[in-house]
Image 1 (spheres, rainbow, N blue to C red):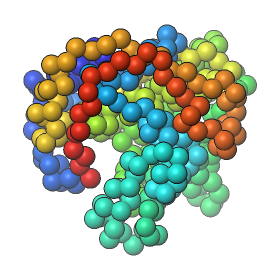
Image 2 (image 1 turned 90 degrees about the horizontal axis):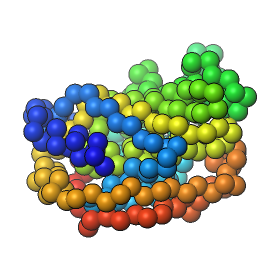
Image 3 (image 1 turned 90 degrees about the vertical axis):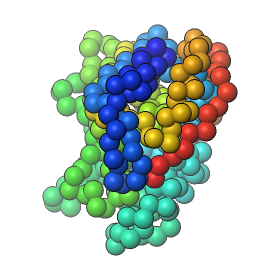
Image 4 (image 1 turned 180 degrees about the horizontal axis):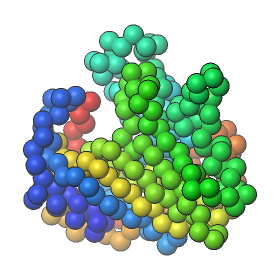
Amino acid sequence: MKQYINLCQRIVEEGVWVNNARTGTRCLTVINADLEYDVAGNQFPLLTTRKSYFKPAIAELLGYLRGYDNAAQFRAIGCNTWNANANDNLAWLNNPHRKGEDDLGRVYGVQGRAWQKPDGSKLDQLQKLVTNLSKGIDDRGEILTFYNPGEFELGCLRPCMHTHTFSLLGDTLHLTSYQRSCDVPLGLNFNQVQCFVLLALIAQITGHKAGKVYHKIANAHIYENQLALMKEQLTRTPFPSPKLHINPRITSLADIETWVTVDDFSVEGYQHHPAINYPFSV
C-alpha cells in the first residue's frame, strides 16, 4: 500500500494536465512509475484504503490466458470490464472489422495465444514459455506480449498492460510486467492483482518458487473526474496486506484453459475501508 499511496500522492502533487483525445477527459499525469510485489512473501497487493474486488481481476486474467475475444466470454467467467469497450466505444462500433455485439477483435489474449505469423500459422506465446519453464529453460525470451502494432485496427483497444517477461533464477521465477498507460484509481488495482496472480500461477504450473513482480508503468494518470475521490482516498490509513490462496490442484496450462474458475482463488485477512465508486472513461 505504501508504494501505491506514494504514486497517487506524486500524481496529485506533481502531475501535469494532459488532454486525452480518446475519452475527451483531461488526465493529471506523471511519467515512469515502478512498483514491486512480493509473491514469495504472499503480500497480496489488494487495496485496503477502499474495498476492492479481486475476483473480476482474476477472471479477466483467466480470459486473457484462454485467448478470449468476446465480452460475453468474459462475462461468463465473472468479468464485466470489457462490456463498454466492446459495445460503447464509438470508434470500434464504426470499425469495419467488428463482427457484431460483444466482439473485441484481436486484443490481449488473442495475441498471446494466436499471434498471426506471416505464413498464416499461429504462434502460441504462452504455451512456448510454459513448456520452456517447465523444463527449467530460460532463454531470456520467455515473454508474453499482447502488443501487436500491425493489428491495432483489428481490436477495440490497444493493450495497456502489454508485455510480461519471466525470468528464472535457480528454482525461483520472477516477472517483469510493462504497462504503457494506467488509470490509477480504477485500473491499477486490477493490474496489481493480475501481475501477482500471473506469477503465482505460472510458477505453480511450471514447478517453481514464485519470487517478485517488477511492475513498470510508462504513463500513470488520474482522470479529472476522479481527482476529488482520490484525494478522499488518500486521507485513509491502510490496513496490512491480505494473503492469496490458490487451489493447489491447478498444475497445468490445460487446467487453466478448462476448469479453473475464480472460486479457485481466495483471500485471507482482507481489511478495507468503504468502496469508492470511481467513474470509468471509455
